Amino acid sequence: MPTSSARAVVDLDVTGPTISKHLYGHFAEHLGRCVYGGFWVGEESPIPNEGGLRLDVVEALRALDVPNLRWPGGCFADAYHWRDGVGPKQERPVMVNTLWGDVEENNHFGTHEFMALCELLGADPYVNGNVGSGTVQEMSEWVEYLTRDGDSPMVRLRKANGRDEPWKVPFWGIGNEAWGCGGHMRADTYAELASRYATFLHNHDGNELHRIAAGAADDDLAWTEALMKVVSCLGCTSRPRGVFQAISFHFYSFAGDGISKSSATEFTDEQYYRTMVKAADIDRVIAAHSAVMDAYDPQRHVGLVCDEWGTWWEAEPGTNPRFLHQQNTMRDALVASLHFDIFHKHAARLRMANIAQTVNVLQAMILTDDSDDAGGIVLTPTYHVFEMNKGHQDAAAVPVHLIERPDRVAVGDDGLDPLSVSASTKDGKALVSISNLALDTDTALRLDLRGREIAATRARILTADKPQSHNTTTAPDAVAPTEFAVTLRSGELSMVLPPHSFATVELELA
Ligand code: AHR
Image: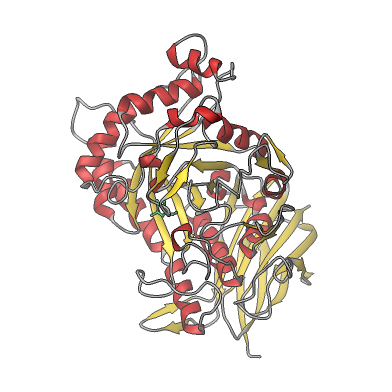
């Protein structure tokens, strides 16, 4: 096996921007088996549950310190009418989820069930409202229902449905993909509309809403600019600043041309590398959106949010193609670890990110087994990346200078840097994350740890025989973290990273 060498300087005494814990956010849509079967099995299910919420999934996710959960969509958000999902379950109307499989939606998982799920997870709710087929009044009343104290029509309705106390809802999405499934609008049209909606999303009784305007696909910078013009309105006096506090964008990784999908588990080396090139491109995309935002908002009042990201493969054979159920391999894990390094780098502007989606859909953390009444779950390689990286949440990014790098891998007309590293410090500890994306090269890495003495280290690695390796009910730990040998001598940490591997090193600072 060829070995490349690399060296990086890590400035442990330099404090960069805070890596918001919300960069590790999640997403649950009424799509396929994410909500129904994934989070929700109903009170009558033999699968252990609390109020219908399956406890094996909740318990596994609690280990990730899930900071926030986005719901109910995605595209479904712009078809969802929240009043259908409150009140006695047997009286809730049934609708057809025309977006995702044309299946009946019985609305048994609604506002109260979502808020109970967030409470069980210890996650902040991120509710995505309906612009496409809803009204300003409907969205405004949902905010009132959730967050207002005292007495009002919506408060009385909430109390009649069994909840006296208001909830805290810090994050609110104003529609979704308004350029597509959210209404096929032009940027200027949506920007005006989002401004109007946001105006009527009130901060009730100390609940401070972070209003998030639905943003671009990939690098549609004109969309971001249209939103920034509305929010900052340079040179105009009549429009208030700050109608919304953040702008989102969505970014998915594919193996091919960005349109046709390919298999989740059967892929060539070239498809592997193409996926990594696409995933790495989020660096350019975030930088480009940030540059547009900087022009209108140099103080960075407005946050950038990537509220859908992850891999998108062909659906698992034998499943409903509109359920977007896919397996998850070591390749997916490396897409995740690469994204996180890039997110950390852009932490000053990027305030939140949500992987699509948490359970059973697209790049999931958990796949549930519905084959019998006992249930059962499989933790995916992506799950392990979230767990190994959780020490970065709300930590200070520290600079990593790669002064000797492995050669770039040629991928068609593109190239890929096969080594990716990021680091942060928090509470007297540092965490360094390292991805070796190369398929056939070990990387001998030396990290020159500067500015602080190191008292202890603990390293773990996630890798497998091949990048196609994945976990199943019969082989649940085919890809799981193991202890990893590193050497610390005179402030230099050395390690040899095998191909397609992800490692974390926790450093206790003296
Ligand atoms: O995550 C699946 C879908 O992808 C979402 O509903 C939509 O917003 C995006 O196109």
